[in-house]
Image 1 (spheres, rainbow, N blue to C red):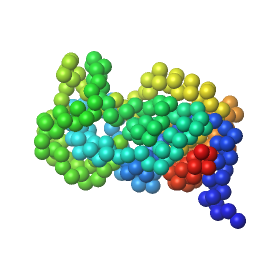
Image 2: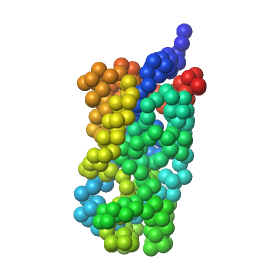
Image 3: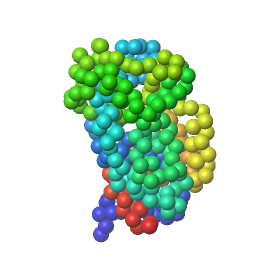
Image 4: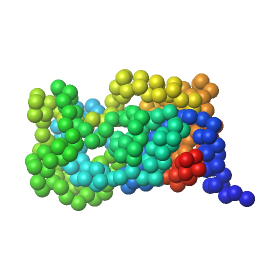
Amino acid sequence: MASPTAAAHLDLLRFLERRRPVVVTGAGCSTESGIPDYRGPNGTLRTRQPMRFQEFMSSAAARRRYWSRSVVGWPRFNRAGPNAAHHALAALEQGGRIAGLITQNVDGLHQAAGSDNVIELHGSLGQVRCMGCGGTRTRADMQDALESLNPEAVTRPNRYIADGDAEVDPSHQADFAVPACEKCGGILKPDVVYFGESVPRGRVDACWEMYEAADSVLVVGSSLTVFSGRRFVLRAEKEGVPVAILNLGATRGDAAAALKVDAPVGPALSEVAKRLA
């Protein structure tokens, strides 16, 4: 008799044999790479709220707080590499098994694993954008500038948190120097969608084009708490499009799912990708 885990993997295999879904991934796809999430069993939101867009834009103190923490958390975040889930999804794409990938993650690990047809719904932490002139620079360049201005700030964190954040001694924040845009003197912000900020319209439209090119939806490693990701499941439910969810723990889309696999995403996807190869 097959174990519950083996049976769940078989159900996912059968779903992908019959369907060519658009895949929607969340933080649970990257936790096996050592990147903490917001809402998992040890998620950041259990102890603190993330930076919000209006707070970042309106408060110099908030920006000092953000960058004083980010300068410590970025090196570890930047060293993270793709895990089994990322590699399996890349293999599924290369085998023509999925129509494309919409990720809520900002870590670039899908591309690092070899996925090509990827839309970064919430942007990329690897880039910094000026909120004045719209110019961009790499996060690596920003790190160099931050460390040059604040040589004593790069210290051991109390704890690493989601999306390159870290808990550090508050004494590092009061006098922390934050560089401005070299072109216009504007505010520099990570090129990601903060809480309280809207996803750019063009990016959403591109996601819907990918959705319409698929015949189903596969959610991987997302609790679907945030509407920007849950919208794809809501539309699928309304239109009668099949939805499968692979996630460790409950999600807000479970009631709409034709298939729910409650399991670590890396081993499950690896097994399925191997059998479909």
